[in-house]
Image 1 (cartoon, rainbow, N blue to C red):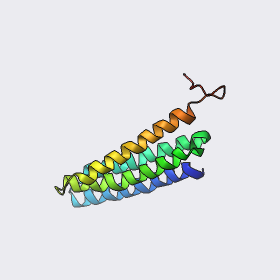
Image 2 (cartoon, rainbow, N blue to C red):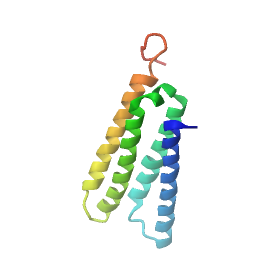
Image 3 (spheres, rainbow, N blue to C red):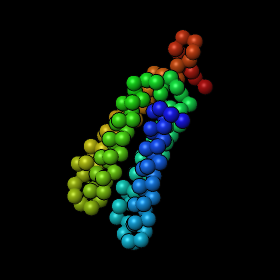
Length: 132
């Protein structure tokens, strides 16, 4: 694995490691206030990033698109803002960062969808999207 696929996958591994550490900390402290942040770190941080990395690894055309890099930047910024934002929100310190991070994460997923439609689904015979 290399390139954008590796960046996504390696980022996901870092995020799930952080999510595990947060989960262990919550368990030791018996304080599960940050469970929503923990869940989003694992789901958006690991699952979404790792699956995106695998997708780009098996879809070179989409990986070579500039949209893949935009997707990575937005997805990364989304995790970096949404997860701490959720932690702030559940501890009563405001929801603004969680909202902003959610919107950035959504923007990243829309870029991913555009990349999927524009590159990955195109057939070799004329650029018409394949229908299973």
